[in-house]
Image (cartoon, rainbow, N blue to C red; front, top):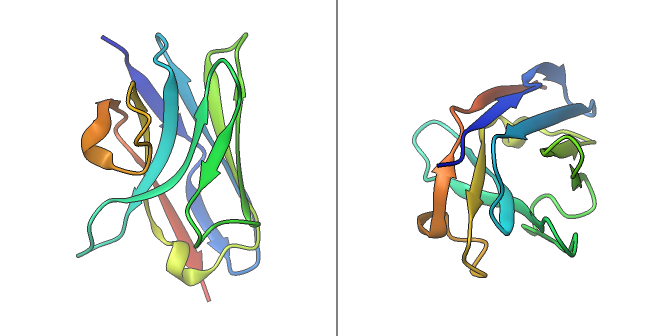
Length: 120
């Protein structure tokens, strides 16, 4: 069992930045961030691998968001820059084993989510 705890969400103006953190009680090969806006399905944002550090991003955030990990702290981060109103959502941290990183169904553990609101 892996427990995940997100923090760092909040209200920010368009063009601003936020950094989300996800503290994990254990490890799985893949760590990812997803988000879910009201009335929409949960969507993939970014993923990373603990060992290799390789990353993968959704096209909608490429060039603006950066996922990273701190192995000593068992923590994964999501640095979000140039935020847009359409980035408004609850952001979830996820942990799993499958290489199909962009599908929510492939993740075994989820955090409780943190709200990110971007005002125009």
